[in-house]
Amino acid sequence: MRGFAAVIPARNESRTITNVVSAASRHVDTVIVCDDGSTDDTRELAKLAGAQVVLNFGPNGYGAALNCAAQAATKLGFSGIVTLDSDGAHDPDEIGNLLKYHVQSSSDLTIGSRFTEIQRCEVPTPKLHANMFAKGLFNRAVPINVSDLLSGMRVISGDALRILPDVRNFSWTPRLIDEAVQMKHIINEYPISVRYNAASLHSTQAIEIVHFLEYVLELYIRNGQECIQVEKMLELIHSWSAFRVIFDQFEYFLFPVLEHKSYIFQKQIDVFYRDQDSGTRIFVEETGG
Image (cartoon, rainbow, N blue to C red):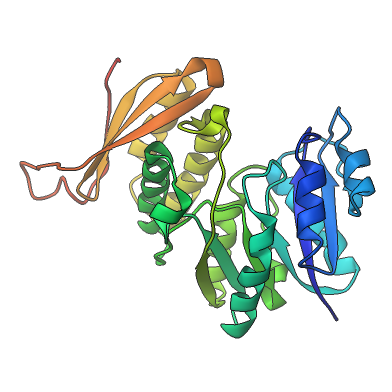
Protein backbone atom coordinates (compact mmCIF):
# COMPACT_ATOMS: atom_id res chain seq x y z
CA MET A 1 0.00 0.00 0.00
CA ARG A 2 1.08 3.56 -0.68
CA GLY A 3 0.91 6.45 1.77
CA PHE A 4 -1.55 9.33 1.73
CA ALA A 5 -3.13 11.29 -1.10
CA ALA A 6 -4.72 14.72 -0.85
CA VAL A 7 -8.28 14.66 -2.16
CA ILE A 8 -9.75 17.96 -3.33
CA PRO A 9 -13.27 18.46 -4.71
CA ALA A 10 -13.39 21.50 -6.98
CA ARG A 11 -15.81 23.47 -9.11
CA ASN A 12 -14.93 26.82 -10.70
CA GLU A 13 -11.96 27.50 -8.40
CA SER A 14 -9.48 28.77 -11.00
CA ARG A 15 -8.38 31.63 -8.71
CA THR A 16 -7.19 29.35 -5.91
CA ILE A 17 -6.63 25.81 -7.21
CA THR A 18 -3.02 26.34 -8.34
CA ASN A 19 -1.83 27.48 -4.90
CA VAL A 20 -3.85 24.81 -3.09
CA VAL A 21 -2.48 21.96 -5.24
CA SER A 22 1.10 23.25 -5.18
CA ALA A 23 1.15 23.60 -1.40
CA ALA A 24 -0.62 20.28 -0.74
CA SER A 25 1.82 18.38 -2.96
CA ARG A 26 4.63 19.19 -0.53
CA HIS A 27 3.03 17.03 2.16
CA VAL A 28 1.50 14.01 0.37
CA ASP A 29 2.51 11.52 -2.28
CA THR A 30 -0.18 12.58 -4.75
CA VAL A 31 -2.84 15.28 -5.08
CA ILE A 32 -6.12 14.20 -6.69
CA VAL A 33 -8.60 16.85 -7.79
CA CYS A 34 -12.14 15.86 -8.72
CA ASP A 35 -13.51 18.49 -11.08
CA ASP A 36 -17.26 18.73 -10.51
CA GLY A 37 -18.30 20.25 -13.82
CA SER A 38 -16.22 23.42 -13.80
CA THR A 39 -16.86 25.95 -16.55
CA ASP A 40 -13.58 27.80 -16.02
CA ASP A 41 -9.93 26.67 -16.15
CA THR A 42 -9.94 24.74 -12.86
CA ARG A 43 -9.06 21.33 -14.29
CA GLU A 44 -6.33 22.66 -16.60
CA LEU A 45 -4.71 24.70 -13.83
CA ALA A 46 -4.88 21.76 -11.42
CA LYS A 47 -3.05 19.56 -13.94
CA LEU A 48 -0.40 22.23 -14.53
CA ALA A 49 0.14 22.45 -10.76
CA GLY A 50 0.83 18.70 -10.66
CA ALA A 51 -2.49 17.18 -9.62
CA GLN A 52 -4.12 14.11 -11.06
CA VAL A 53 -7.53 15.27 -12.24
CA VAL A 54 -10.61 13.07 -12.40
CA LEU A 55 -13.87 14.29 -13.91
CA ASN A 56 -17.20 13.99 -12.18
CA PHE A 57 -19.24 15.22 -15.18
CA GLY A 58 -21.25 17.39 -12.82
CA PRO A 59 -22.12 19.47 -11.08
CA ASN A 60 -23.10 16.52 -8.88
CA GLY A 61 -22.35 18.01 -5.47
CA TYR A 62 -19.74 18.08 -2.72
CA GLY A 63 -20.21 14.51 -1.55
CA ALA A 64 -20.16 13.08 -5.07
CA ALA A 65 -16.92 14.92 -5.87
CA LEU A 66 -15.27 13.70 -2.66
CA ASN A 67 -16.25 10.11 -3.39
CA CYS A 68 -15.01 10.39 -6.96
CA ALA A 69 -11.56 11.55 -5.84
CA ALA A 70 -11.43 9.08 -2.92
CA GLN A 71 -12.21 6.18 -5.25
CA ALA A 72 -9.38 7.29 -7.51
CA ALA A 73 -7.00 7.32 -4.53
CA THR A 74 -8.10 3.83 -3.49
CA LYS A 75 -7.57 2.47 -7.00
CA LEU A 76 -4.06 3.91 -6.96
CA GLY A 77 -3.36 1.94 -3.78
CA PHE A 78 -3.24 4.70 -1.18
CA SER A 79 -3.84 3.64 2.41
CA GLY A 80 -5.37 6.96 3.40
CA ILE A 81 -6.56 10.35 2.20
CA VAL A 82 -6.59 13.88 3.52
CA THR A 83 -9.45 16.03 2.26
CA LEU A 84 -9.41 19.81 1.96
CA ASP A 85 -11.34 22.51 0.17
CA SER A 86 -10.26 24.00 -3.14
CA ASP A 87 -11.20 27.60 -2.36
CA GLY A 88 -8.22 28.29 -0.10
CA ALA A 89 -10.19 28.10 3.15
CA HIS A 90 -7.80 25.46 4.48
CA ASP A 91 -4.05 25.89 4.76
CA PRO A 92 -2.38 22.97 2.90
CA ASP A 93 0.79 23.50 4.92
CA GLU A 94 -1.08 22.17 7.96
CA ILE A 95 -1.43 18.77 6.27
CA GLY A 96 1.93 17.59 7.61
CA ASN A 97 1.04 18.04 11.28
CA LEU A 98 -2.47 16.68 10.73
CA LEU A 99 -1.09 13.50 9.15
CA LYS A 100 1.57 13.13 11.83
CA TYR A 101 -1.05 13.30 14.58
CA HIS A 102 -3.35 10.89 12.70
CA VAL A 103 -0.63 8.25 12.43
CA GLN A 104 0.72 8.70 15.97
CA SER A 105 -2.76 8.48 17.50
CA SER A 106 -3.63 5.37 15.41
CA SER A 107 -6.82 7.11 14.30
CA ASP A 108 -9.18 5.95 11.57
CA LEU A 109 -10.68 9.43 11.22
CA THR A 110 -9.00 12.66 12.29
CA ILE A 111 -11.11 15.79 11.98
CA GLY A 112 -9.32 19.06 11.42
CA SER A 113 -11.10 21.27 13.94
CA ARG A 114 -11.57 25.01 13.53
CA PHE A 115 -12.89 25.31 17.06
CA THR A 116 -10.37 23.71 19.40
CA GLU A 117 -8.29 26.90 19.26
CA ILE A 118 -10.82 29.61 18.52
CA GLN A 119 -8.46 32.54 19.10
CA ARG A 120 -5.94 31.14 16.66
CA CYS A 121 -8.49 30.49 13.94
CA GLU A 122 -10.40 33.75 14.39
CA VAL A 123 -13.66 32.10 13.38
CA PRO A 124 -16.47 34.64 12.90
CA THR A 125 -19.05 34.42 15.69
CA PRO A 126 -21.97 33.46 13.37
CA LYS A 127 -19.90 30.54 12.04
CA LEU A 128 -19.18 29.40 15.58
CA HIS A 129 -22.89 29.62 16.44
CA ALA A 130 -23.83 27.69 13.28
CA ASN A 131 -21.46 24.89 14.29
CA MET A 132 -22.85 24.80 17.83
CA PHE A 133 -26.39 24.63 16.43
CA ALA A 134 -25.51 21.72 14.11
CA LYS A 135 -23.48 19.90 16.75
CA GLY A 136 -26.28 20.18 19.28
CA LEU A 137 -28.90 18.71 16.94
CA PHE A 138 -26.53 15.95 15.77
CA ASN A 139 -25.46 14.95 19.30
CA ARG A 140 -29.06 14.35 20.28
CA ALA A 141 -28.97 11.34 17.93
CA VAL A 142 -25.30 10.32 17.70
CA PRO A 143 -23.29 9.74 20.90
CA ILE A 144 -20.07 11.62 20.14
CA ASN A 145 -18.74 14.98 21.20
CA VAL A 146 -16.64 16.61 18.49
CA SER A 147 -15.85 20.31 18.46
CA ASP A 148 -16.16 20.70 14.67
CA LEU A 149 -18.95 18.65 13.12
CA LEU A 150 -18.77 20.16 9.64
CA SER A 151 -15.06 20.55 8.93
CA GLY A 152 -13.98 19.86 5.36
CA MET A 153 -10.38 19.06 6.32
CA ARG A 154 -9.91 15.54 7.65
CA VAL A 155 -7.76 12.40 7.39
CA ILE A 156 -9.38 9.03 6.65
CA SER A 157 -7.51 5.74 6.54
CA GLY A 158 -7.82 1.99 6.97
CA ASP A 159 -11.27 0.51 7.34
CA ALA A 160 -12.81 3.99 7.54
CA LEU A 161 -12.17 4.35 3.80
CA ARG A 162 -14.82 1.67 3.27
CA ILE A 163 -17.62 3.67 4.90
CA LEU A 164 -17.56 6.84 2.80
CA PRO A 165 -21.19 7.99 2.54
CA ASP A 166 -22.90 7.40 -0.79
CA VAL A 167 -24.51 10.84 -0.95
CA ARG A 168 -23.88 13.83 -3.19
CA ASN A 169 -24.63 16.75 -0.92
CA PHE A 170 -23.26 18.51 2.16
CA SER A 171 -24.64 15.91 4.56
CA TRP A 172 -21.60 13.80 3.57
CA THR A 173 -19.56 15.13 6.50
CA PRO A 174 -21.88 14.33 9.45
CA ARG A 175 -22.85 11.04 7.78
CA LEU A 176 -19.19 10.01 7.77
CA ILE A 177 -18.91 10.71 11.50
CA ASP A 178 -22.12 8.79 12.20
CA GLU A 179 -20.88 5.79 10.21
CA ALA A 180 -17.51 5.89 11.99
CA VAL A 181 -19.26 5.93 15.39
CA GLN A 182 -21.45 2.98 14.44
CA MET A 183 -18.44 1.00 13.23
CA LYS A 184 -16.52 1.90 16.42
CA HIS A 185 -13.66 3.48 14.49
CA ILE A 186 -11.12 5.63 16.33
CA ILE A 187 -12.07 9.29 15.89
CA ASN A 188 -9.89 12.20 16.98
CA GLU A 189 -9.55 15.91 16.32
CA TYR A 190 -6.57 18.13 15.62
CA PRO A 191 -6.61 21.96 15.51
CA ILE A 192 -6.46 23.71 12.14
CA SER A 193 -6.83 27.29 10.98
CA VAL A 194 -9.34 28.52 8.43
CA ARG A 195 -9.65 31.48 6.07
CA TYR A 196 -13.02 32.84 5.02
CA ASN A 197 -13.70 35.05 2.03
CA ALA A 198 -15.99 38.06 2.36
CA ALA A 199 -19.05 36.32 0.91
CA SER A 200 -18.90 33.44 3.39
CA LEU A 201 -17.59 35.37 6.39
CA HIS A 202 -20.76 35.55 8.45
CA SER A 203 -23.48 33.48 6.79
CA THR A 204 -24.09 29.80 5.98
CA GLN A 205 -25.57 28.69 2.66
CA ALA A 206 -29.24 27.75 3.00
CA ILE A 207 -28.77 24.63 0.86
CA GLU A 208 -26.13 23.38 3.31
CA ILE A 209 -28.52 23.89 6.22
CA VAL A 210 -31.30 22.08 4.35
CA HIS A 211 -29.07 19.09 3.55
CA PHE A 212 -27.99 18.89 7.17
CA LEU A 213 -31.51 19.15 8.60
CA GLU A 214 -32.80 16.53 6.16
CA TYR A 215 -30.12 14.19 7.46
CA VAL A 216 -30.95 15.05 11.10
CA LEU A 217 -34.54 14.15 10.25
CA GLU A 218 -33.33 10.74 9.01
CA LEU A 219 -31.40 10.21 12.25
CA TYR A 220 -34.33 11.13 14.46
CA ILE A 221 -36.67 8.82 12.52
CA ARG A 222 -34.10 6.04 12.83
CA ASN A 223 -33.91 6.54 16.58
CA GLY A 224 -37.62 7.08 17.13
CA GLN A 225 -37.07 10.68 18.23
CA GLU A 226 -39.43 13.62 17.83
CA CYS A 227 -39.25 14.97 14.25
CA ILE A 228 -41.94 17.63 13.96
CA GLN A 229 -39.71 20.55 14.99
CA VAL A 230 -37.02 19.61 12.48
CA GLU A 231 -39.68 19.47 9.78
CA LYS A 232 -40.84 22.92 10.88
CA MET A 233 -37.30 24.29 10.52
CA LEU A 234 -37.10 22.95 6.98
CA GLU A 235 -40.42 24.58 6.09
CA LEU A 236 -39.27 27.94 7.46
CA ILE A 237 -36.00 27.83 5.54
CA HIS A 238 -37.77 26.92 2.30
CA SER A 239 -39.96 30.01 2.79
CA TRP A 240 -36.95 32.21 3.69
CA SER A 241 -38.41 33.01 7.10
CA ALA A 242 -36.57 34.25 10.16
CA PHE A 243 -37.04 32.01 13.18
CA ARG A 244 -35.69 30.99 16.54
CA VAL A 245 -34.83 27.55 17.89
CA ILE A 246 -34.45 26.62 21.57
CA PHE A 247 -32.87 23.40 22.79
CA ASP A 248 -30.26 22.24 25.29
CA GLN A 249 -30.49 25.50 27.26
CA PHE A 250 -29.57 27.62 24.22
CA GLU A 251 -31.61 29.90 21.99
CA TYR A 252 -30.60 30.40 18.35
CA PHE A 253 -31.92 33.01 15.93
CA LEU A 254 -31.66 32.33 12.18
CA PHE A 255 -31.89 35.35 9.89
CA PRO A 256 -32.13 34.95 6.08
CA VAL A 257 -29.74 36.80 3.75
CA LEU A 258 -31.55 36.56 0.44
CA GLU A 259 -28.82 38.15 -1.71
CA HIS A 260 -26.41 35.36 -0.70
CA LYS A 261 -29.06 32.62 -0.38
CA SER A 262 -27.84 32.05 3.14
CA TYR A 263 -28.66 32.41 6.84
CA ILE A 264 -26.89 34.13 9.72
CA PHE A 265 -26.88 32.32 13.08
CA GLN A 266 -27.02 34.18 16.40
CA LYS A 267 -26.96 32.38 19.74
CA GLN A 268 -28.33 33.95 22.89
CA ILE A 269 -26.15 33.39 25.94
CA ASP A 270 -28.74 33.17 28.70
CA VAL A 271 -32.03 31.34 28.24
CA PHE A 272 -34.41 30.77 31.14
CA TYR A 273 -37.14 28.13 31.11
CA ARG A 274 -40.44 28.17 32.88
CA ASP A 275 -41.06 24.44 32.79
CA GLN A 276 -38.86 21.46 33.47
CA ASP A 277 -39.25 19.87 30.02
CA SER A 278 -38.39 22.87 27.84
CA GLY A 279 -34.64 22.44 28.24
CA THR A 280 -34.65 18.95 26.73
CA ARG A 281 -37.09 19.37 23.86
CA ILE A 282 -36.72 21.40 20.65
CA PHE A 283 -38.85 24.52 20.28
CA VAL A 284 -39.14 26.35 16.92
CA GLU A 285 -40.95 29.64 16.33
CA GLU A 286 -41.09 32.02 13.35
CA THR A 287 -40.00 35.51 14.40
CA GLY A 288 -41.05 37.45 11.32
CA GLY A 289 -38.02 39.68 11.23
